[in-house]
Length: 406
Image 1: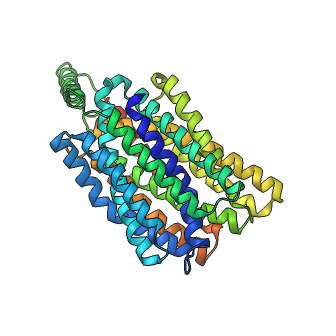
Image 2 (image 1 turned 90 degrees about the vertical axis):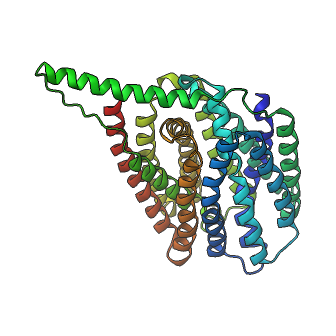
Image 3 (image 1 turned 90 degrees about the horizontal axis):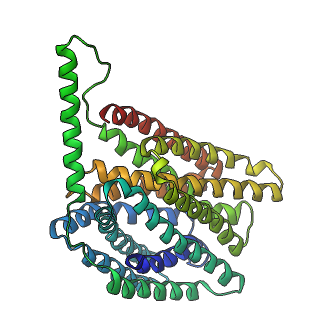
């Protein structure tokens, strides 16, 4: 618990920023619009992709995981302060790009710390525990944004609060985060999986010697299918959520406090999912969960297309249902893919997972707002749902090969 106290404050800050930034760019900054916000978010994410590999490689090569967590939180704090000092769009874009670059620096180290502090069979429980704690922080950040905007606080004041929360995350992490004394759990998993492959081969040879036919195959997982599934899911998610605050503000004419409330419901559903995942992690199969969630998320996004044909009250109700369910199933997906990634992705390449998510997110951040502004939000929802279905197909391919391997 103490290990992740600083992470909670970090998530409070970014929960508040998740809704504040797109509204800040489009409503406060001169010349800012939906496409500009999409371009800023996309370019920042693209720039961060090679750094995801770099941070993952460096933390495994040096085994100084605490250092990269503190580097991330300290740098983000300084950059948020610089962000609050300017209203120039170009400078804002540059500073935001650096924020995202250093924001991803702690992710590989965090994943390794969880993997090394839990046995392999408890990885899902460890990731679910971390996710539930930090999602509580995200919910708290959205609730804080809801209250402060309801009370009339300005965007500048909200940014200052985000900076203060980021400082708290650095101080608390400096106190409570330590590198693991021994680093061997992921290595043991690699050895176990290699022995499993050898055992499978021996069984097949034995059956051939006794003229027995076996329909199984001696294949490793289709890692490419997993990678494409991760990218398409990340792309669909960012394509859907990046312009969503603007959709609520423009299409439904909702006040900022209500928009915060809707995203608070989404994160609350996510928090409930993480808590249930922690309690029932033994009954959850990673491969089947990722497949089902990608399909269900596509269906939920398609459902939001009907918002424009409903009355105001029913449109709000449908939005609440979609966001709550979407958050709940994402929690199941998030823990499952984190556990899978630590199994499949080898040591020294832990940044690959973050890079894959970043690649999909960058494309979605750019394409979602552009489609919405130049065509309509409904086309954005259709494109996002289609990408979810593509991720479903990719995970389905991975699942079949993964099952054969096991």
